[in-house]
Amino acid sequence: MVGLGTAAWSRVARVFVRAVRLSLLSVVGVLLLAGLAGAASPMQADLVSTEFSARVVKHRFVTLGAFDGHPGLRITAATKRRYRERWIASRCVTLGQDDPITFGGWGGDTAPLHTTTWLWVGRFSDYCQVQITIRRVRHRRLKVGTETVRTTRHLRQTIVVTAAGRAYVARVRAASRMFAGIVLASLAYDRKAHRYPLASDLLAKSSWATGEGLVAGASADAVPPKGKVGLWTDGLHRVRVTFVLPDGTLLYHDSDDASHALSTNVQGEIDDANAPDGWWADTYALSSSSSSASRR
Image (cartoon, rainbow, N blue to C red; front, side):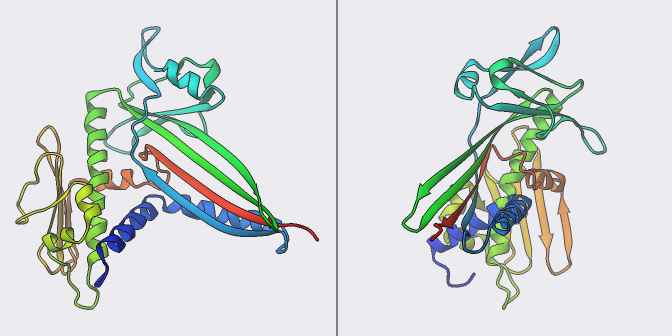
């Protein structure tokens, strides 16, 4: 990445993070669009663009309460008014030593908002997630045909049910932020010199990274300030990313390219935060456009 300006650096970093977090979604979207294009003759359709985006927007669709003596998710009146014609999906997760147990899923437990007030919370669930999907199709007349724009937005909320769920959700949220530091260091790796730049030099070139709360660590053992993600490199082969949880637990991801050693206590949460299904993205969207030529 030698020679990139600050603006270019920021754009590359943002695009890379989005691409990694939504890799499977991208593949599915491209295959779907390829199928649509293949269904029409070359003279009728031409793919113009496909865009993916993800951002953190805290949605408040439901509140945790009790329904007939059991935990439940009550849909807010504002949600029912605004999304009356939409459907809401939910899933609840029970954490364990092995794979977590999941009740429901985006393609399963769905209900129309205009007739639903409560959503079921699975027994012993530690946290739940709900989703509202909005799909829109717009047509715009062109000089030589018509452009069709299809947009799908997934709006999600994560709700903690137990103390264990609260702790896990905090770890996943932190892992998502730490992943940005890992990506930034990977982008900055000098493949000719086979080395990473110092963290201070790296962050000085990236206004995007400092805006995300990344700070340069003075040493490998340095502890970042509260709410900040610490990034340290030895200027050669080693990268360490850290974060301190509200309860004082230090999360770390320490990799050494020379020895191929990895030491971390947050790899599972990083994998979960960046799962291709995008469950932890509060808002993400897929937008595609295609044009069809007029018949002569």
